Image 1 (spheres, rainbow, N blue to C red):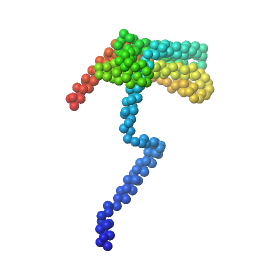
Image 2 (image 1 turned 135 degrees about the horizontal axis):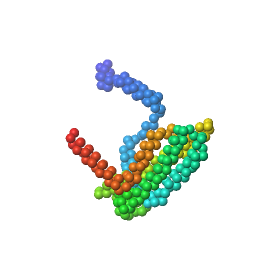
Image 3 (image 1 turned 180 degrees about the vertical axis):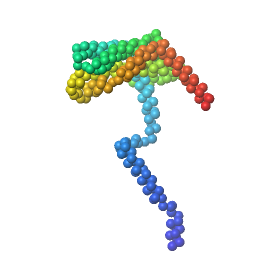
Image 4 (image 1 turned 120 degrees about the horizontal axis):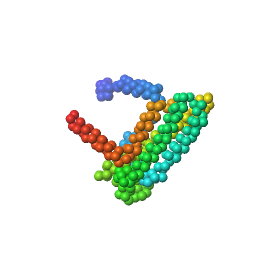
Length: 273
């Protein structure tokens, strides 16, 4: 009897109540998550390799983008061809079928077509600025600099060498200028696609206003025109006007000086805390 009591005394206390409460809380939490958000796929593993993978992909992406910059002269006229052709069709449609448009729709379609023409010209000017070899911080000048330092003209095998040369000590300002130039071109094309979508949607408005039903991408185009706002188009136009200036030597110089001043102010502010 004493042996049994001693054995029972040496056993850990019964935590079944605590375990049950914990399991009940976990089950309730999981049920709430599934009810509100659906079944979630929880990633397995610690994810410690993710930063390395993201870093490698970023380096490869920059290297490939530097290699692809040589094709800028070939794609520079594309915005004028695409935007000009669609704008011409839109103008003819507005003139011929203006009676099918309401006054509000006609004005919005005219604004979208005007924006498309402006976006086509501004995108072309932005890419032309990026090819200015006189400017050492233009996209094409930076690509040539990285290529000459890397000495490898291959698309993939030379990508790390080009990107790392641009990231090396003493070349950081070229790296910032490259990122700025790439962002200006990307935003210019996004503005062009924005107006292109709305203008194409305006061509479908007379049919949709007469009860014709569209499906798929065509319906999306028509909806983009109907739901587009005047304020949104004006804001996009204003920002698009800044892109050629941003890609110019004067614009890049001002942006770098403003960024340097802001960074200096932030450092001084942190010191006072």
